[in-house]
Image (cartoon, rainbow, N blue to C red; front, top):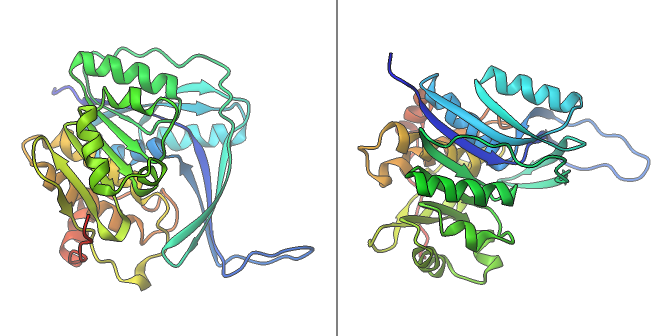
Length: 308
């Protein structure tokens, strides 16, 4: 029997409550939402669930994530068991919540977060790992495992959603760094300037996600490239929250499961995964199968690209 590939994700756990409403009540008022979804949340957490679903049992997915001994924490463990995601918990007192309101292709989010860790990060043997994916949360664990995995020859990937206090140190051990436009804004860099910065950090593949305008990226010594997003009609876009996280989970699965393919294919695959997600409410409903991604690629053309 062939041994399954092993991947490790490190992030912060949320329970996402996503609801559709045309207004928020104020004062002494009640209002009924049109629809809602309750799901797992968090950048690397959602990426891990995405990777596990795409793997269809062919990859062992481990996740170092915050966990509280409360009913939300127990619900999260049940979700992880359903998707065969192995949880290595780092204790906090209370589970974290995100309240998400999608709104015409955008989303408003209120987060309630407990990142006061009660324990050191779990110790995991990285020998035999195929990949590591970080989102910058648990910065001490992120730096520790990025260094260990680089030394062990494990592919390291970073979702740079925002700049953290040790981002520069972590990037020195990252092979694939895909950051957000917010990350660029925090560093006062354009997309093209950010790619130069990632090159200087030693990242072999670097990119900036730009929503409907696709991914600006490079590989090795190449010039800047653009992978367009798929043009999902606006009337089909329900919830963009989590689309970036699913993008990360999809390209990582694609790279590890299909190493013979070029990075352009991995990113096109991931763009189709994001296109599937934005048409669904909540993260769990937005997890694509390989068949879903193939259907997206057949159904939607590429959107227009925006200059760097």
